[in-house]
Amino acid sequence: MPLFHGLSAFPITPADASGIVDTGALATLLGRIEAAGADSIGLLGSTGAYAFLSRQERRRAVEAAMSAVGGKIPVIVGVGALRTDEAQALARDARELGADGLLLAPVSYTPLTDDEVYEHFAEVADAGQLPLCIYNNPGTTKFTFSAELIARLARLGTVKAVKMPLPANGDIAGEIKSLRTVTPDGFALGYSGDWIAADALLAGADGWYSVVAGLLPAEALKLTRAAQAGDTAEAGRINDAFTPLWALFKEFGSFRVMYTIADLIGLGRFSPPRPVLGLAEAARGRVREALDSLGAAVGR
Image (tube, rainbow, N blue to C red; front, side):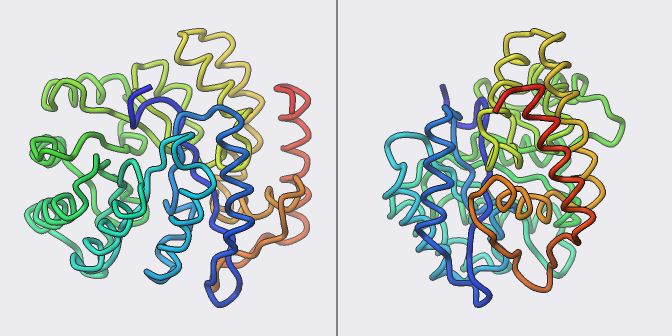
């Protein structure tokens, strides 16, 4: 399957309180994703806590990933950073270590203009010389990519895809149709926000950039394949089974919930990077119930 298509699984990055990556635990998580048959791994995305890690630790994570699953499954590496030169260095690291693609968000403390974002992406793409996906994540970055800016970036040689959030008007099919008219043939349109994944794939999206697939890849893959096949009934049934988990993602943030899932399914009791706190016991109980319901409905 082409890069930036299908199910891209975004795992957490296990690390200690000092931000030192547990490369053995990370390799275990990535091995599960590869074994489940996901189409790619989104390493060091938002779920992977890239913004909390030093360049050295991000490099160690990429090294561990390529050692564990390189050549078995494509690895897309997040290279977002506050400074352009830092993002360029991360992109070069990823290329040097054998990554298959890059994911870049316009991280900034100061609100950015379209021209600033364009120049940032152009310089990082040139440094990385790998297929690059635009990370449109306004909920975190407070920057929203217009269709015009996406089209402008898509004309750069290595910018091959965009990762989109739920459109403000909820019209995923309309947005996909509109973006297809301004981007080159083969430019991949994918979506994040796990609760809209089925709708996006059924509407013709090329990919699902999935938080939950980072820890529950087999279950997420069943939903992906049903939607890709146009099986509305089966995709709806599986998505319904995920609904309690989607509700928790929305209430507490998927980042916090994922650390609880890792513990509950026996992959390790990792803590999110401070100042982010883990879930209280009552919320953990609700995550356990959601997992039990999902397992009974989808099979685990």
